[in-house]
Length: 280
Image (cartoon, rainbow, N blue to C red):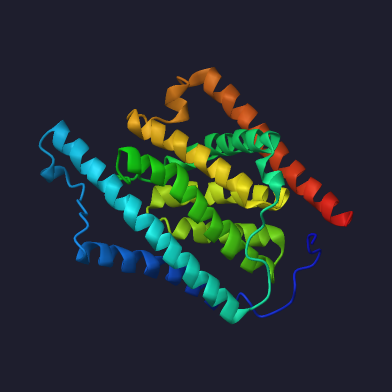
């Protein structure tokens, strides 16, 4: 029931297995999208030439949100099932996901959120070098549901559950978290979102192992997406922390505090985990 001190030595997952997992996730999204179009589900494209006024823009965004709320969960369910059967076929034993009630600990959630925001502040100068995404998943009620409910649940189940747990069958924890975060980033496709997903994946993966629970990362993922969606709704997503804080000494003071938080949180989390493993 406890944590494994040494990864089990086997031939799963290989590099080929990891590529197959990525292909399965992409394949599921393509299949469901194609079926959606075939069944008449509207898939409006956000092309600037097609938008003539604000009402049309909002209408297209709401339609995108409704379409995405159908396609996204169906594609993630399909991907989850395919991944589950593939993993069982390749390696029938092993855990699929960890679900300790410790994941509901409010202190862990608050600490994880502070850590996540601090990491985003620290890596922002690098993320600004990457072109921002031109489109998002729409607006309206169903876009909100997709962002703060569907995405956190399905993405955590797949990437912190199926993928990360598969990595832990053979590899050390730090390496497993890094690789699962890379895969998490790759399937987001857009370069700016990929970078953010990779960084967030590192935090989510570490907290997942620290709490032994997917519940903690689902909650954190949901809060993070809610904040991001709020910024998009308020048309503030293109503002950097540097701009929000007005630059100068205030920004650099906040940046320094966030940097310290990142270092302390990372070192302390992994140190506690080693100590917890050693006591088993």
